[in-house]
Image 1: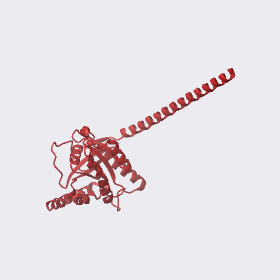
Image 2: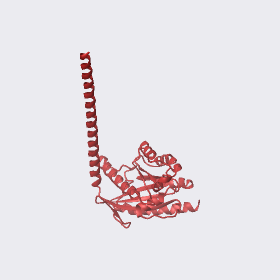
Image 3: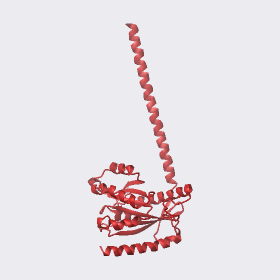
Image 4: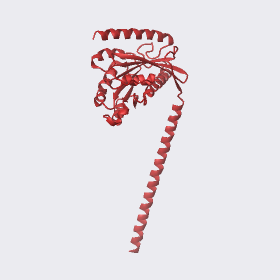
Length: 280
């Protein structure tokens, strides 16, 4: 009996030692994972700190890079408010639906290089969809906007994604923006649902914004400039040509001389659009 009791005690002691060893291994593993994560975050922060930028005035004439951006999404989700707040730091308290499109520019210096964003803010009304799609051509990045308090605007994102992908080149960058984050008490679309959709469609960036409060509004366009410039340089280094080109001429990067020509083309497009609107 005494020998059996001793064996049981030894067995219990062995099990206890194994459990303690397992606990120590798990703690060590968690600590290693935590250290690795901190290391990755540190590297990420270090890389982000290396990006220096300066917002420039609209009258900058000489730019190093010029990119076309389109802003799309359902009506009344705040596309114009987001664009105006993000580029000009201005917000209108009253709602005026966009007729056709509005054009804004945003100049930013990133690591001593001047980038010009040519931003086409489009209307979301169905009657203009066939006209607006013609302006997708040669876009470098699309910003698709929904309102966090409007489930329908989120449900329609699939349609907007299908349309933009069918009308543009495969290298187009796509941002997803959930606007009106100031209406969190009326939220109809969870942040997790939007993150899942962005991941499902392999979108390049997702963020929630409030054009009214200015939350993350400017960050959308700063991030756009950073990503487009980085993507362009990486591709040029690897391939020696433009990633968004369908011909030998670049569709996203313009020299200062080509900027003048592009501005003239833009004015012609605006005039044609006004004529079309008058005929609707």
